[in-house]
Image 1 (cartoon, rainbow over the protein chains, first blue to last red):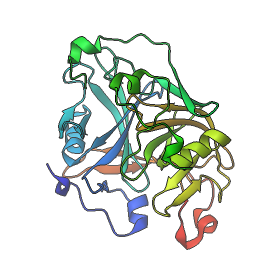
Image 2 (cartoon, one colour):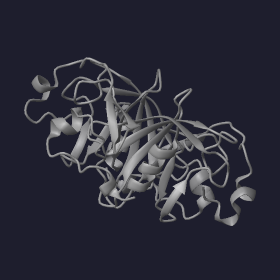
Image 3 (cartoon, chains in turn green, blue):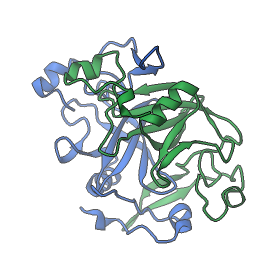
Length: 154
Length: 154
């Protein structure tokens, strides 16, 4: 599956923004950005990227697939950990270069490779001289080291 | 303000993921991705990008600033429309290349330049031959044409 599986974006801005055709605007690397939230409570779980194949697989199977930029391959999220993402709804934005996936996470309900529910487990706050991070008080839902080993990547 | 206003990312993966220093990992264009949600109900309002100056201005003022890639300049969101974003909380993800802003939107509570509350006003669904879009039933909260004129950009 390639980007030719999706129609080319229209040249008309109003068609792109108001039309009924899904014409994703892939960037120079052939990717769109995906925001992933918990369908129940709206927590932002992760941010990832999808190429045409990942988009098509996600639409066909209802299970979220991404393009792993670090491993340079299609990535069925949760294939190792069991934390598959069932897509409740996919949405796209005005200029169709991003998608929003509302998902229900299976397995441990842990999306982050660190074993946490969300990758966004730290708040940023302004402090004297530099910004600092405050970590959520949350125990990992699985042992990331034993799950992924040295590689420790999702 | 430049990226040197923020410490360079640590070489240690555990420090990057578990540390208390905010060390944003800017991409080759000097940007991190920002996911913006409504602090009340979790709706994803938009996706944007921030350079070091936008990050610093946002932290200093509590009002969301971005880097407009189309206009190639700092962008105080809502400076034209009045739909300023008051940042309730900023979070960052495991590898610190993205931020999540939970905001309260002033003015018309319309984030999209089309006059809608969210840029993600269309659902994507699989259909015979191609994926299609279904638009939300929502009247624009302001007249985008008269607000922005021909340019019609936020």
